[in-house]
Image (cartoon, rainbow, N blue to C red; front, side, top):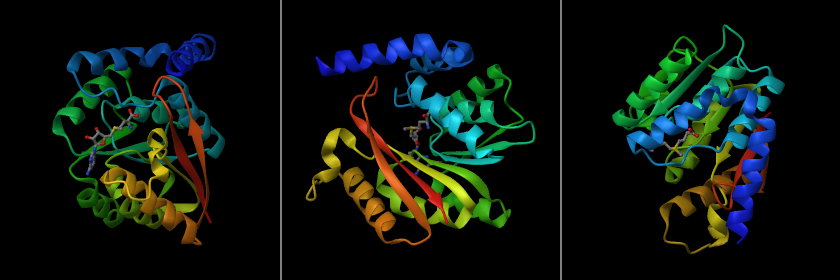
Length: 220
Ligand code: SAM
């Protein structure tokens, strides 16, 4: 019952508040058709990323986990003309679908997809001397602790860091979970607890994507 209400409330808000940005609806349809997992952010969450990008006046965004490019497009949509999204994806098939979606939406100049394991491709961003104003961690959760260290290394002072899916239907509090993703998230939270370089919180969410949540932090 709860899940049904959460989804219907999301539908209501999507209809009322996100209609202007229906440009991206075809992306979710194309992803479904291609049979890639429906684990993109929801439209209200995508719009939140868009609004935060604007509030931050971010120019350079780093995303770990592209999938079909849905969240990448929300970022690109919020950026100034000279802004750029670098998005990392390990699955060539996902990257190809993202490429098609991005081309169809007209954002090829603003979004660069880098294919490979993020832990292998993140060092190339450092070699290029790139720094980011907004970093979105949304890939394999078991590597979240390493992604946080990279994010802190590649962040401009004051950068915003968001990591998705940190509640996992409440499993985050299961200390002895044998799910590596839960353990990855828990280690990530422990690092946030100790690391003086970042000031953070976590917010629980419900909606089309069930019961989950995200971490948000500002780099000092
Ligand atoms: N951010 C996307 C959105 O909201 O539209 C959703 C990303 S999806 C939750 C996670 C993606 O991370 C998948 O496409 C998966 O293939 C990718 N991924 C998993 N492990 C990875 C790794 N080691 N390096 C880079 N990408 C990885």
